[in-house]
Length: 181
Image 1 (cartoon, rainbow, N blue to C red):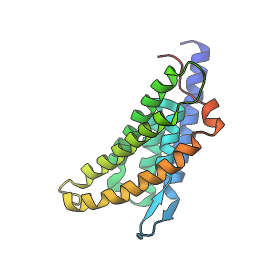
Image 2 (cartoon, rainbow, N blue to C red):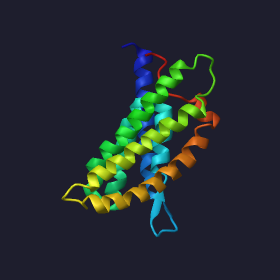
Image 3 (cartoon, rainbow, N blue to C red):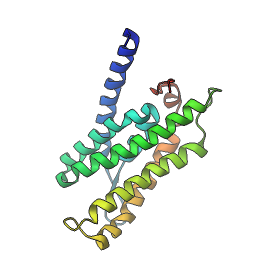
Image 4 (tube, one colour):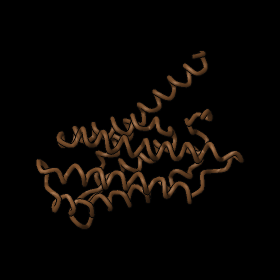
């Protein structure tokens, strides 16, 4: 590995660490919903991290979200959150990376690519938490099914923030996705 590649890797790790903190902070800012619950912008931050870092966003997203659960007092969710949020970021990041590699004209990844990719990541989140919460030692299938609605609201909020923010020029110019395949 030459000096430039090492330097790039160190920068990527440092930026990923900063993104993990952004994910952590975003999960701690709770916005009340009319139904009495709250949503946070952690998922939006995860989607934006995936847009910037590709599959490498797994680490920042998984660690930041897991620490968010720890700080919020949801220790039982730490490991599932690490897996679910990391998988969200990995899948979204991988698909965005592929789309960016196909963009040879230097244009932005179109909305018709971003939206389904980000939506798929949110479906992973909804399905992942349903599967975990449906386990017999958690809440069971009926109660887990009720939580789907709240996770859908969370997903909609994430998409409503991540899609427009991903069009800010910073996210177009500061992609840390390697042009190598």
